[in-house]
Image (cartoon, rainbow, N blue to C red):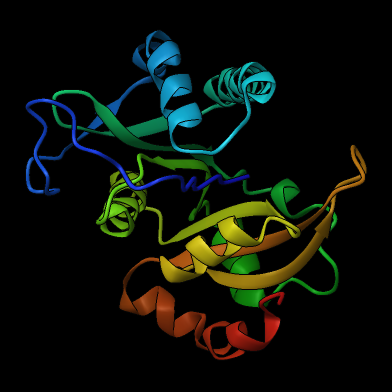
Length: 218
C-alpha cells in the first residue's frame, strides 16, 4: 500500500538547498535498505503528522512493513538525498500468477491481465517525501526511476479507500484508479491504482484514463 506523506511546509536545515536541484536519486539493494531502517522510519515520521503516542506505533508499523517488503523477491528501493535523506520509493515485482489482484471487485481489465501475466507490473508499496514546495516533482522522479530501473511498463499499488490525502496525491502524480479490492485478511477496502509508463502502455490503458475521473472516490 503506497503511502505518500504530507506534513507541514519544510524549513531548510543549515546548509540545505532551498530547491530540489541538489537532490540525487540513488538505487539501494535490500541490504543497504535494511541498514537505512532508522533513517527511513525517521523520514516516515517527519513526513506525516502524528501525536507523541502515535509516533512510536507509526514508526514500528512502518518498520514491520519495510521488513516484510525487503524479504520479497525482486525488492528494490530508490532514495532521494541531499546531505541527508529526503525521500524514497520502494516495492517489488508483481508475480505473473495474478495474486496481487486477489479480491478485485469485478473483471480485471484485459490489458492489466496481460501485463501482469508477462511480468510487466511492479508494485510500489511506499513513496515517502519530506514536505517541500517541490515534493510533487520529487515523488514523480522517485516513482519513475523505480519503474524504469526494472523496465516495468506499469506500476501498481493498493490504498485504503478512506485515505483521501494519499489518493489525491497519487492522482496528482499520474496514477489511475481501477476499482475496489477487498482482502480477506482484514476489514479494509482498498482502491487499486496503476501508473502507466511510456506512450505505448498509456495507449493500452486509454479507456482507464478516460474513466479515472468517474472512478475516483469523492
